[in-house]
Length: 230
Image 1 (spheres, rainbow, N blue to C red):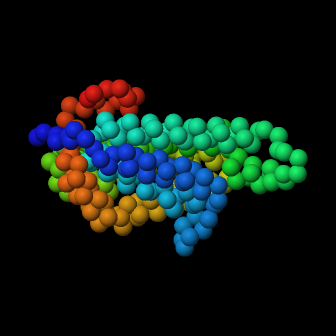
Image 2: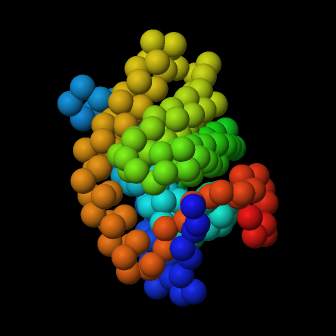
Image 3: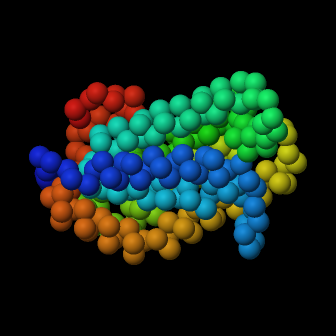
């Protein structure tokens, strides 16, 4: 079983840009808690599941090593965004500008929320990519749906549990905490299942155009081995 990497990936940068954009937009949209049908969750949940679909595309087509690079790129972008929002919020407003309170409410962040978001993001995304890469080997590249859904069950579960617990444990009633965890998880997994036909179309398109279908045999799965060639 051999990987088929292409000497030039025309669409990799576009997929990475879309992944990072979804991540950053989701973080900002998370400032609102909303009710959608039977689900109660933060606004970022509407878009955030797309990051896992992009994560699936990256690992399936380009392999875990390239996906790892993108995950760390997203981490750096999210960390920079949080730092800039915090710095701007801490600076005194100009005379006559009366929206400081609104800025703080929407874009203001606390160390606990930022820490929860970054920890959950890394743990969830790396788990998702690892599970998909391993399942691809076990299934010999068949049953893509089982890999995208199976990896999401693990990745989104870890992400949701870590974020909600770290961010809100002790600040909201336990019943509400459990409701938010279950609502987030059910919505994200349901989103992935519903998007399976779309995932098949995009994966097929990228594999044909990029001439790339990487199997992570012998890959170093250490998430911190950014410079690794394995």
